[in-house]
Length: 174
Picture 1 (tube, rainbow, N blue to C red):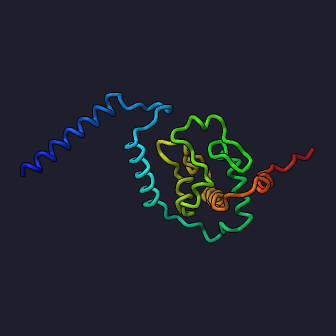
Picture 2 (picture 1 turned 30 degrees about the vertical axis):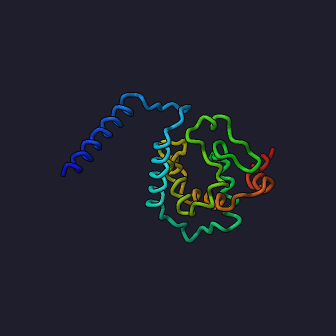
Picture 3 (picture 1 turned 30 degrees about the horizontal axis):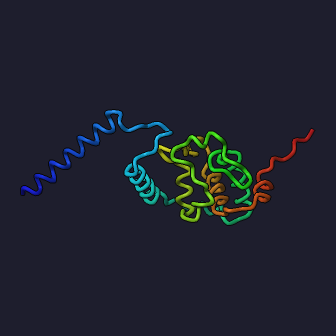
């Protein structure tokens, strides 16, 4: 019984300490401040668990994410929606402001192999709290366009020449 009382007292002390640390202003929310390892660990685990639990959508029957036209439409949407500003793209450097995002936006060609299409769709559609990743659904992007972006992402890495060909805007006629 005494052991449980000690555990309870320690839990209360840890709770009070955490409250003072976070609500007392000791935890810096500056984008230039590195998070303590425990915060990074916890946020990463929470993000991964949330994506795993919530990502269950599948593309509608009308969309084949392996189809070349869908991949090309996704590349065009990726470029038009500004994704390359934060994530870069073949032959496209990240915008300078993205260096100020914390955590850093991932280089998508390095992470797409770890995520299923359903997980990527969920992230693009819903965004990620406490990062710079917005909800494309709240920005008015329809599911079909999000699925085309997923198709492009699943195709990464692609050549710089292919990306440029897929994202070039048609010349305006005079």
